[in-house]
Length: 111
Image (tube, rainbow, N blue to C red; front, side, top):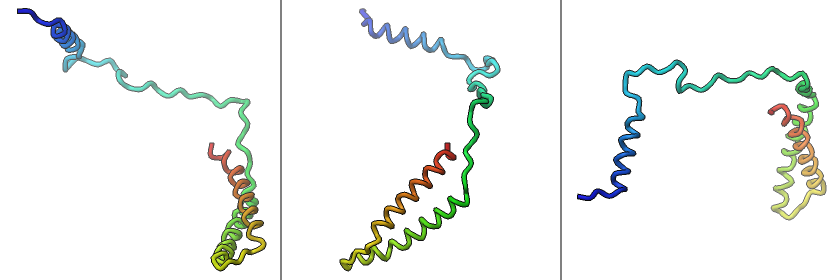
């Protein structure tokens, strides 16, 4: 009886892989399978301290942004009736400018 070579290879690989398994009850070295401890890097003396933020100015600008956004709503409602407020575009530009400034001031704090 002839046995195909692929079948013999399959049997040999199966028995070899089974031989690589660790039998139950065998002691495991301490720390095996655990991730290594984290590497602590001391702060660099060249690193600049976090920038100071003028929170009072940020609050003023956030309040202005809130007021502007609330004042835009009636102007948008009047667009439904075909009326365009002459300062709507200026308000929208100011909202954009304030939001970019606030985002630029706050973004470095999140990193």
